[in-house]
Length: 125
Image (cartoon, rainbow, N blue to C red):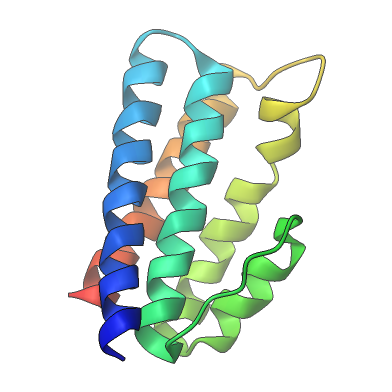
């Protein structure tokens, strides 16, 4: 579990970096960048939680498996799964869609990323 804990802490650090970038982007009215950074933060938070609670995390090109993986990690992960579900819903629109996210969607993405980060901090310690 030593390597998993080290990796969990590294993912937690990345989650915070992307969360900070999301907040800075939102303050500059860069809504797609804010949402995209929030998604990346949330995925890193998910990885931190799964690594801490189960000792591993999956890496997929598609994030469809991320929510079930988080749910299976235990009660702490399952409690965070709805936030990840909401967050992932804006990923494609923010990163690839011709029409980007709205300011409200960007703000919600930040809220969900913050929930995931706070939960990861509690889980990783």
